[in-house]
Length: 334
View 1 (cartoon, one colour):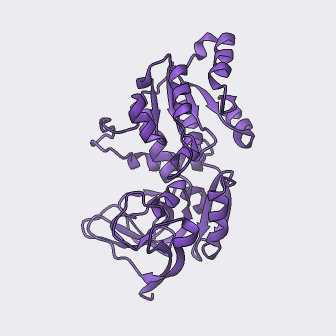
View 2 (spheres, rainbow, N blue to C red):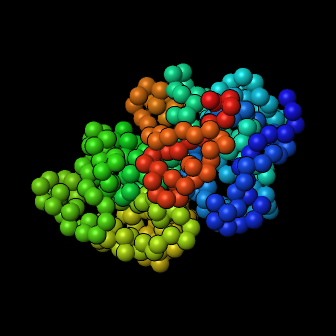
View 3 (spheres, rainbow, N blue to C red):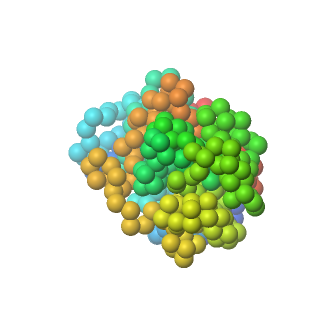
């Protein structure tokens, strides 16, 4: 093994297409409690482009690619229960190392085994969507007998949230475009278009079936997550109206500024929800990897690209034309 690897990262902040580059970097070494994997696949998220624009600014250079899967090739001090050669998925450590998951090798602090029968690209689509959707639904209190509206169910977090809500026995209304509308209906959700006039459309659903009046609302609208994107406070205002005028029944993983101004929950100040007091819910990754292997859960993969074709993937994502998860494959995952 050489001491260098390919990685996609940025040395200055700005628009992703301007600041990102594919270059060589030193292999990262796992610290205590960490593992290093030979990356097979890396899922891309809008959050990657937000990092380039200055989200969670830290010392540069920094890498992109938060969702990864691959085979363990080194373990740090104190790590047990996993060994070299094990296929795992998890979030790449992008905060403490100058590279992240869009690389030939990546460092993980949290991981779960890739369940037998689950492809590497499919596994790489899971970590961020699973962790975020599960955490927010827990905070919101989604459970059997409740009706939840998932706004932005065509986003990968929203699509995951609909499935999780259904697995919990909740009635689920989903706002989505035509790309995922039929798939969401097949999951048991009532689907309505997003956009202007949503309260009136929800009122029509409730008029036909009063039990479908939303008790809770989860906002996962994808464009809200892009730093510098359009203001969406009007959307949150409509969601509060749908939630019987109570902003505490609404939570957003996207529009934090408007949420704070309107009293809508945004995850800040919520209590830990994991069995050991975890805030981030990576403890459920293994559960959903198994469900995905059984065909009972999915985060749709739209396209997979070789690592060197990352600019094509970037253009699709930033242009809002991804239509599902975009995944980069390294030589190990090709």
